[in-house]
Length: 311
Image (cartoon, rainbow, N blue to C red; front, side, top):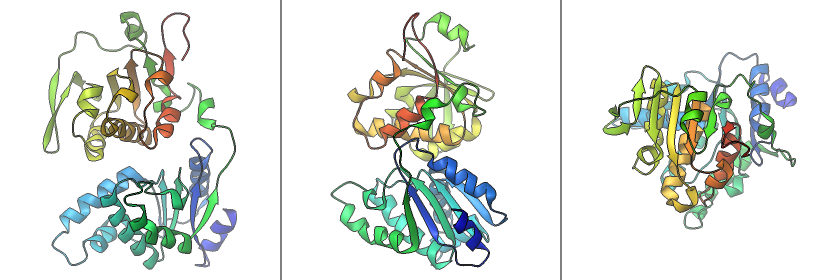
């Protein structure tokens, strides 16, 4: 990566694709590389957030011949180095947009650096659609140096409450007794409200200033989307999510929404108190793709359980 940084000034730098299992230090490497760059024309973005902006921009420019190009002109504004964290593809609709995105970025000679839990050939793993994404995989391999970040240790599991991240200062409570709630200063005697989010209304258990509380069902069993979570994250810094069920008993769609929700809260560094009925590791079963990343991230929360319990 040091060699890549040195080549930026010569215009010969190659894009870089870092992949590996959760918690192996990919984001740490990307952060270090990004901070070391003296370039001012650089951007570091979480993929969820960028993709939401991309969709919104293309809707705004939908009447132009090249809506994608107009959107990238607006979003990137002379950017020479673009860093994406936690890149993944699971939806065929998104995959087709990603195809155009990568072609446009490489044509503009923008150096792309990204991290992913998947090797390029593991993107869009759904066998119904994977073949249609193979041209993009070939494009990635042709334009990017692919490197695996290996090792057996999940470094996120060693994060402590002393971390500067607000997310890692959050808590997982089970079963959510009155004493536990008092211990983390949760509000009491609250009143439910309806929040307008985009074109829909969501039922919140509580909302005041920059703090909001939802049930799991309100956020994940309804047809919510990443853009809803991003809008809420712009409005609230402190989140309380109640009634976490056993995810293995939920639909794949609900599991995927929960994964997306945790991604947004983690990426946006929001303080989270999550409340369930059993130890966290027993609540995070299920078969949705990327649940391993969710387990790793939620594993950084401080746990308050019944006296003498662990997990």
